[in-house]
Length: 385
Image 1 (spheres, rainbow, N blue to C red):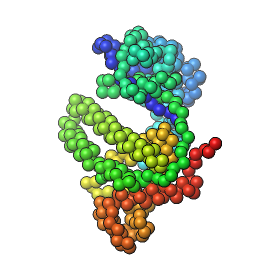
Image 2 (image 1 turned 90 degrees about the vertical axis):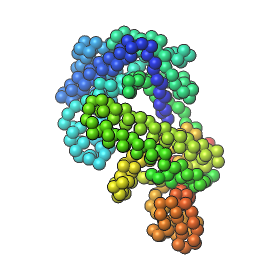
Image 3 (image 1 turned 135 degrees about the horizontal axis):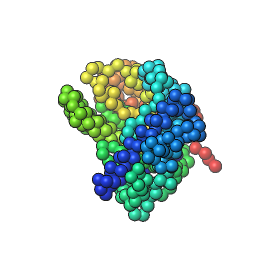
Image 4 (image 1 turned 45 degrees about the vertical axis):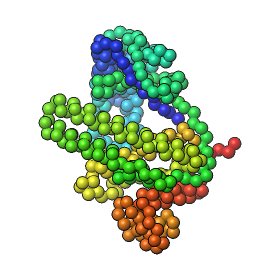
């Protein structure tokens, strides 16, 4: 499986920072020139596009030979991704409009978009925690970087390209590492996980991971965005952009923490993890006006993706189950009725009379369904030999 490791660069001077920023601008302007040619002449393959634009972008944008090659490859990869999305129909709710826009004009790269570097123009010194990187102002040597210990261990197995990224005036390098997956262990049972807006995740063990703190944070950010949007100044727009990114990072960090707790609990008890299949939930659910913002910012897909990749690294089985009636069905006697769910937090079975927290009841139903899915062999089973 592929894991992304990220490090933060610490340019030692304003000159170094300006050189990195200028490199991104030059590479992305060159990418836009190559993209226009690729679109106009239908040259989407790397070899033919390189023959058409290599010398031009190298001279016009003062790029080194390898930087020009990486830029052309970035353009071809972008068109290949677009073609795959068009073929698969992965264009969101306004698919037809997006398809028309995508097919009627060339791909445009932001001036601060990520730029790939290979080992010819980027050298890592993991012992000294520094990099040497090519820029339009010459090669910068001994640029320090900082990262977590886990990222440092992953970088030891790094091969291939790394991307230079600029975000909020800071520079990062991201590298993709291939990590061997351990075999999936045969689960003794399943840990059911009920995902929600009020409570981000509730487990069949009775652990409730509430979203109250995150929702309060998001409300503060929404109020602040509303005030800034009324100003309509460039400074306000820059501030809005920074706030949006910070909120996204905060939500992702919260999901990482929750995913790690879930996978650790399942691994420790030799269980698998059962999740609801919530694809299309936003289209199926009709939310009240005061709940729409919370529903639209519900990052259940991201949390599910984090759980899956952490589980794969730990050899923990993950299954997805049908979420229908998990909130209305009694986890003890299986009686299903809409009146069993008294309110958001309380479940009272009209048949056996059991009283449970509604999300805990739902997570237990998910755990039962996860075992049934596994027993039916509807997912890939671990190899025994």
